Image (cartoon, rainbow, N blue to C red; front, side, top):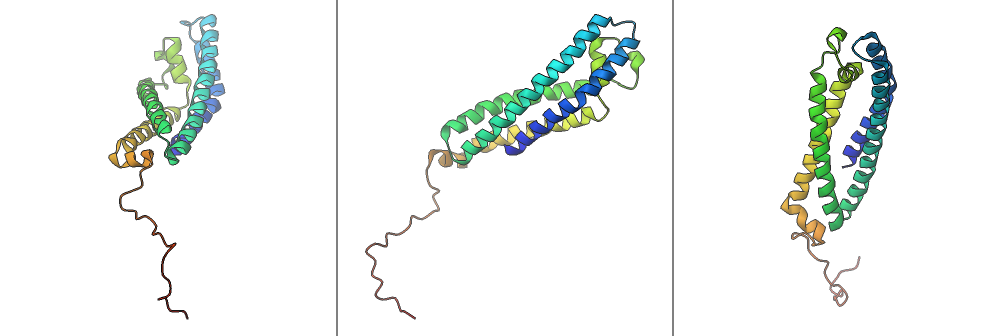
Length: 187
């Protein structure tokens, strides 16, 4: 779970690092087009900044929650386990939607500006070439991590850990208070 938190922080940093260049390339390409008005460009650029900020904030919050859940799960707390199920379900939904977004973004040919007709396609085409593979990799990593967490929590061997039951193969410590140590040889 901590590794998924790290992926969330990396994705958040990547969003924040690329947004200024994306907005600049978007504005330059959209202003060359006669199909898009300046007011649409301004609104879309503002939306890019807002969506990036909200996405980065949500990813950072998600990372903090994952670290907290990981700490609670290491302590074997049942409430944390249930919260992890809920957060993992939300993470699966997010990663699935982000995966669909990544594959639809890959379908736009950013090298041919003349084929881009609307504001949305200008936005997608403004991202650097390395963005879609990175975004797809981070999304796939998050999806795989969420599935792994769900599977590990669903295993029957994890149930006793969260109930506080000691493992079957561990032996209790013997009671040595009344033991007779007189037969022991001293050297």
